[in-house]
Image (cartoon, rainbow over all chains, first blue to last red; front, side):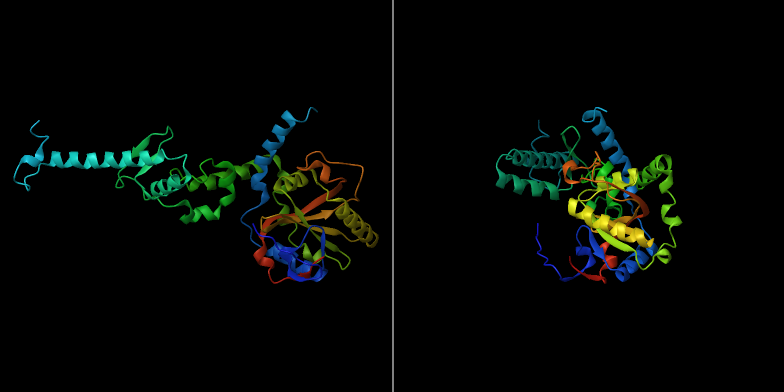
Length: 65
Length: 260
């Protein structure tokens, strides 16, 4: 466990960004370009079967409708 | 009885092979008893740690499924190594974590298991999520369509399960203050005919999961039932996914921004 205190208005890499933080357009464009051109090996879709089974179990046990 | 007393003979060079074998086997059984006695110290932490490390380093002895101690010659086994040193372990860590019950076990490890799990996941998505198969290909020329008035936000979700629900139902919601900022941005963008894009990532994963586009305002009265923490996320808005791929943070290290 480690804790980092980041004050407001600091100049930081984008991996430290928080929830619902706006990205300026030029940086955002470069990010989208890298995401487009990136040859990915993994996606979240690999875990979909697992989460669907979890949802079915939730519906059986906790959701009467 | 005479054969069982070999040391009485004066010629030490004339030792029969059967006697030699008996000697070796007795030494092995002694070692096994020694280890099992150490295992009985399980209640006392200090002794247990010592014996545990000794057992781990000894490749010859390991437990069966039934709990019996089995002994195997090294000659007839395949070369075994730590899972962490194996190449496939790092390559496809995700599949093995979720579906392989022998994920960290040292005895049984099949590197082709991960490959089979990947095929299984692909087949599952081919069956049930046909609209997501060619999603990355269809949006290849996406950055050319960006206009000057578009707005981009980063979203950090607490768990991967919420992202799964948002892809499945085309829905997202943030905290109260987060919903206010996103709603204001959407209204500003809709007047100018531009869009609001969201970059999703899960906390602690060290990667971006994908990109989505807002397609509606925030309804504060609605509430989605499948979030992992229900009371924390009031409100709903619709979302359309553009990219679904994992991109690690190390590709974005050269980009700096001012923190909020």
